[in-house]
Every structure is written in structure tokens, then in C-alpha cells.
Length: 380
Image (cartoon, rainbow, N blue to C red; front, top):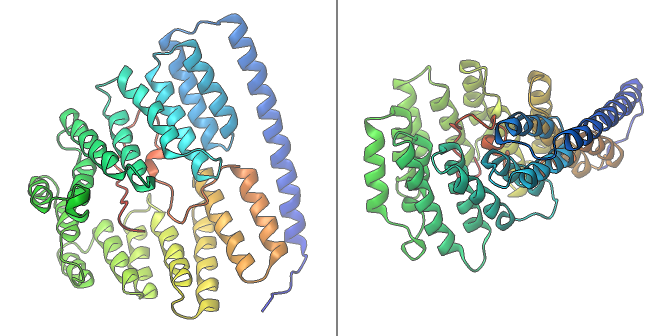
């Protein structure tokens, strides 16, 4: 059933704001290119230290929606200094960002760029961790060389642990790879269990998460995380895991309760709100439950994220708006969908079109070690 499209004052206001944003973005672009032209003329051969601020500037431009400009700046930086590891790292993340937005870039395009960053700064654990993840992203996307990329990914994660032995997210990644892949692809339960033991005395939550990864297929993870919650009722992360466990049992409304509790316990993490919305989308994609109700609840959850997270970074705001636009189209509101999609593109022309929330390590400052764990074996 198509919903009527009502033109109201809010729509007019949104259009005016969009025009204002476009004018401001054009002004910033003009100032950037003038400044960069002066920089090239005055200082054609940039020393390494002088480029550090430029890498940070490119990162901030990307997060403000000026992705093409960020890429241009970074490409100029590696031309000016072909050993600039920081510029290669940020360029790799920029290509990753653009790939998620449908630019045509592929995981195999990102790998040689991040390899350069690691080559010129081999002791930098930030670059090493990102490289390991990109190796596995290639394994995930590869049709012919998946096993080779899995091997490279394991080697890369182990290199991370040489630099930082207590890097819990890297250990958990190895547990998933060895514990969940079949033997013919490099899986090895014994190796996974040995890594799980190393987490036992390091971090109680990650140890619990490792044990959950290694549970037999079909195990009751709602009961498992429910028991954990009795011990750690004030743990935002345990609440979040229990919420995910309910999602996998198609009990999204129950899961949402624990996701909301996770946000209350850790007000700095708003990703559970996005996961609530995605859980309803997953129900729609799997043809489970009442489609119209799930569409309505998914749209409402994405709107809640936008309304309650005013300080969210622009790529995630655009991601949420993009999903609302898709949902409006599913519900028959073509005009509303087009308008919201235009707003999302105005915020970030390369916002992620993927189902999964883009990994946080794409957005952390270029000199900050990411503590974000991303699973390639689970949608949440």
C-alpha cells in the first residue's frame, strides 16, 4: 500500500537547509583548493613532520563529508613524500570509506596502500591492526584466493600481538578465524582454544565473548549471556551481547530492551541504537514477522538514533538517513525516499550502503589505537 506524500512546512525547511549546506560545502571546498594550491607553490617538497597535520586535516575533511577532497590531499602527500606512512594509512581508510559508498573500489585496492604504511612504519600497531583486518576483508570478498588471504590475515594479526601482546581485539579475531572456519580454510579449534585461554586472565568480558564464539552450534546464547548478566548487571557490553542473542532468536523487541540498557550504562556508545534498527531490517530481509510493522519499527529506530545522537559523526548520520530513505521506498513513499537520500548524499557522498554499521576503526583518529572489534562471522 503506498503512503500519501504530504508536502508540509518541515519539507520546505529541510530543502532550505540542504541548499544552505551545499553553499557552505562549496565555500569550504573553494578555500581548501586555494589553500592547497598556495601550499604546493610555496612548499613543493613537504618534510615528513609538516605532513602530519595535513594527514589529520584529510581525516577531518573525510569525516565532514569532503571525501574526494581528502583523497586528493592524501594522494598529493604521498607524491611529495613516498615514505609517508601516516598518509598511506589514511589514504587506505579513505578508499575503504569510498568502497562502502559504491565508488567501485575493492578490498584488493586497499591492501597495497595499507601495506605501504606498514612497510614505512612497521612498529605502528594502529597500521598493523588495520592491515590484518583488510587482509581478512579480502578473504571475505575473494572468490579464488580466500585461503591465501586467511593465512595472510592470521600472520598479520600475530604481528599485531608482537607489537602489543594484550591487544584483545586482535586475539578475539584470531579466535573467530581459527574457531569458526572449517579446517580446509585454516580453521583449528585447538589453536582457537589456546588463544581463548590467553584472554581468561586478561579481560573477563573478552574471555566470556571468546567462550561464546567457541560454543557448539545451536547453543543457547540467551541463557549464556543471561547468566553473565546476573554477575555483571551494570556491564553495558554484557547487556549488548544479550540483546544480540535475542536478535538471533528473532525476538527483536526483547533484544531492544537490553540494547537500550547498554546505551544507558554507556552513554558514549550509541551503536546499539543502530543495531536495533538493523535487527528489524534483518527480519524484513529474512521474511520473518509482520513486514509492515517491522518496516515501521526499523524506520522509527533509525530516527531515534538521529534524534538522540546529535553529536554522531557525519558518515553515520548519513548511513542512518540512507536507511530511512530505503525504508520509505519499501513503504511506497518514493518522494520522501528521494528527498532523504539526497540529504544523506549531501552529508557524505560515499556513505555506507552496506547492511553492517561501518567499522569504527574507519573513523578513529589516525594516531589512536582502535579498541573496536569487528566480526566477519556475524551481522552484529
